[in-house]
Image 1 (cartoon, helix red, strand yellow):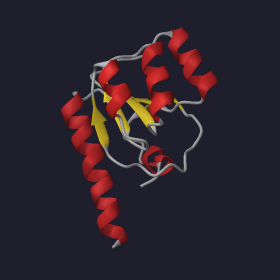
Image 2 (tube, rainbow, N blue to C red):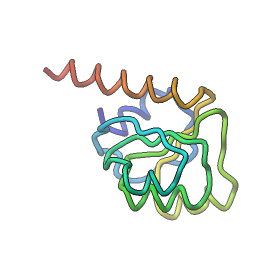
Image 3 (cartoon, one colour):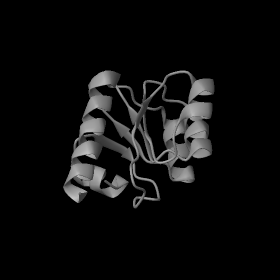
Image 4 (cartoon, rainbow, N blue to C red):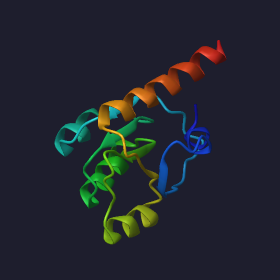
Amino acid sequence: MSLQELLNKKLFKVINTGSCLETVLTKPFCCDLLSSAMSKAPAGGVWITVIANMNTLAVASLTKVACIILAEGVTPDSQTLKKAREQQITVLASEQPIFETSLLIYELIQNDYKRSL
């Protein structure tokens, strides 16, 4: 499943649509500790977090995650949103808790994989 296909499902509020929409989603990644995310977030991953600041964008850019999903109704401030636009990072939002959001992403990726077999 590509990032564009995820966006097309309209399951999450789109905060910012970035570039690289053809990126294939690899797996969900849940982490609220930026130093841990910096070393463990997978390229192509969907990073689900409640941290909505400039440092989150920096880590997303560094690790090459496909997108960030801000869970639990968290939204970025205007400065962070401006930076997401400048850096062309896709940021989505979910009202659901981190676990449920991650589980949904996992199921979508798995179902897409099974269909491709």
